[in-house]
Length: 203
Image (cartoon, rainbow, N blue to C red; front, side, top):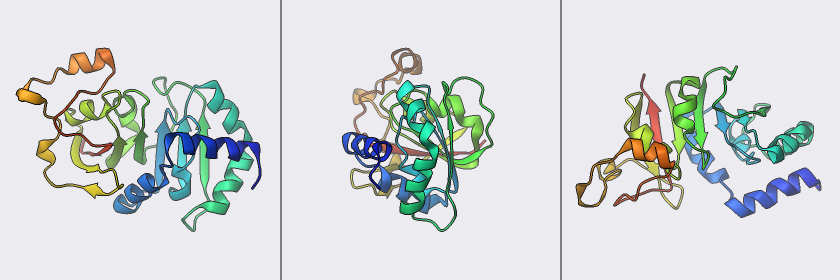
């Protein structure tokens, strides 16, 4: 499909790295059918492996991109990895504002602030939060009683659940100050880190 919209997405995927494999391993492992992606920009890779995805972003470029929904849906239909028809929604607003959406199986948080904290009410019990710690989102989830830390995803996009007690530890056993994380919106320099973390909502 030769189209400016799809070309824009492909160029963006090349820039940030194609995350399709990342979303695929999580989807297959946890039987994901529905997801929300706050702060998605134009990363539509989740829809290649997840039948129903709602993208949320107030960035003007994302709002403009998703106006051509028919073209996006056609591209997904031609490249998706599931038998169901795709369902794609886009909400062009800040995800911290009130949202009228149903609960989902998965929340995707990639470099977009405290997504897990702001939108966890839209995650089903036993649903999965996939996040990195660029802005401290994984740190806040780790110390949130609503979540259980269940795994990491390594550089080869493999889910690992062994030795999780070794993560989220500072050098010299320094105390983790969540207030500082919230103020600076930045992950801490732990002795052991991962590209992505997995949490299960338990409450």
